Amino acid sequence: MSLDPYAVVLLVVLCTAIVCATVVCVVALLRADRAEIALVVRALPELAATLARRRRR
Image (cartoon, rainbow, N blue to C red; front, side, top):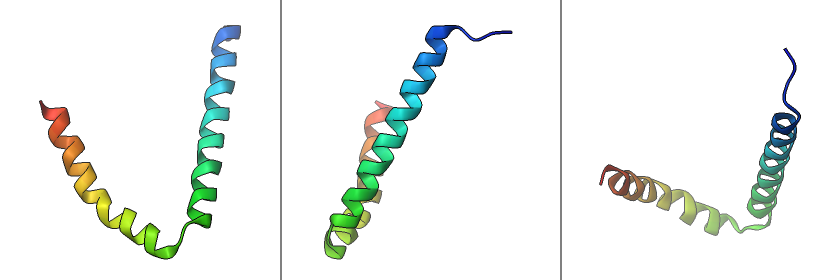
């Protein structure tokens, strides 16, 4: 069973996008102040609850 060439290209592009997004996030975290990171982490539960409520509608 051979893979479709378009599927291979899509897979490579998807993997590249995931790696790039990971690098951007890690660099942003390394450059941020600890206080900023703490504020974002504290806001995550509220954000998750808001998204869950919006999704139920």
